[in-house]
Length: 345
Ligand code: KG4
Ligand code: ZN
Image (cartoon, rainbow, N blue to C red; front, side, top):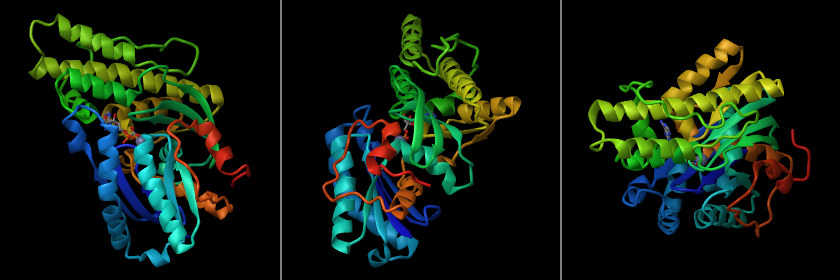
């Protein structure tokens, strides 16, 4: 089955053509990061407008790069939620319009479902596995028993890890989004320079909290005689990243052990972080847990990641009605049920 997938939940307009939910023929991503960088964060109204401007161009390019025409597309998928509702509606409405015009089925996919299954576009990972979804809006641990079968084991109680990276980046004057900049600076910094807290690390649950680390960085910076630069700046970046990564790694592997899961998948934009990739891989091999990361392009927001679930849903005959609406808040453990009510393969 040849699918056209559309993602527009935040500040990336993306379209992909994927065969049989695995073979990515194209995956075009138009980032609005330069637009939002001026404001230090995503401005929802601007995001919607830029999605509107970009969406048909991005779809045309995805079809062209894949070497297929719209007439050959057999189903359409779009992110239904969670995300900015105005942004989601651009992609979802476009998907429904194409489905209506072409007489083909459409399906709405959960954004995080896309993230936690994206790794399957590159390699087989047997179910069940533990997924750490770590992005600008999410820091969640899921037990993934199959497509459409997810159970939340833990989540952040305040900021998402990516949000903390971005806020710390901003307060260090690194621009938006801060995650990539902190990652780059951390490479030359001393991770033991500043002892930032490791929130909830010793609590007997799988929840996270990152706003305390962010405040600790702010307090540290305020006490300095001048805004940090050079080596001092790199040291703060490295110390912050190390504290964040340590909590993510230890809690994830603890959850895997508690659930008896031998495989861990790390997904979402923060899964691009080199410290997280290195430390999770090392801790995984020390504890006999297999750790999988999608390649960076498939970690960040992209449309191809929707195809794994979309293909399974459409094969199971679970198409959405044309009045399907976007949902800003949508817990992943209810996504499969909401779409289908059927047990999926
Ligand atoms: O999954 P994603 O592209 O969008 C959301 O669904 O949120 O994740 C974006 C987040 C941003 O907070 C960004 O700063 C963070 O991922 N990020 C990183 C890195 N690359 C992206 N954080 C830390 N290190 C990175 N290398
Ligand atoms: Zn995302």
